[in-house]
Length: 175
Image 1: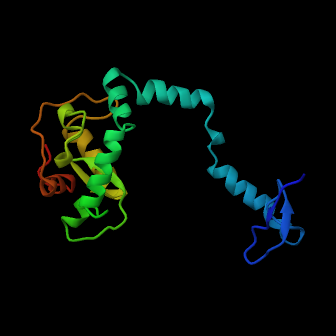
Image 2 (image 1 turned 90 degrees about the horizontal axis):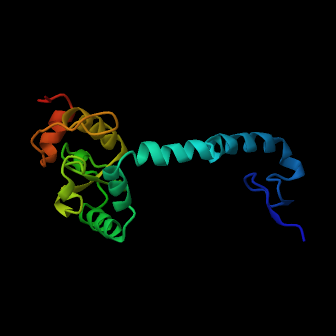
Image 3 (image 1 turned 90 degrees about the vertical axis):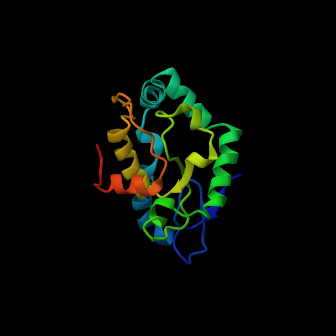
């Protein structure tokens, strides 16, 4: 028995047979739609590339493998949810400069796990962060702590104050 679905054209309720997405009346949009889906599909990355990323880049050593596996535990899931609710889904870095960025769903370690392994499950070392601040902070961490692929960890004082981190991220007293 053939399967059917609605036409993807707005306010068109005609049914089309799989694998098509548009009815005969709107079929000129089919090629454009398929091209846009191909652009965002994951088929561009081969299995070999995915395997190389997971085994060589992401899990490049035992410490990184352990860190990555921690984010897949129930403990992390509960910690993350507690922090999101504590911070009301607001980026704490934006909030420190009196800017509200709602619906931030990323929870970040204030002092990176690579720099301080024993604080990965410490709720006081976690804060909600928006995407923009997270990118800036990651770049800053690579310079200050020496985290990330290809860098060596520096023996520096861990900074737990978000305001001080912000100052240093935005060109303040960075070493």
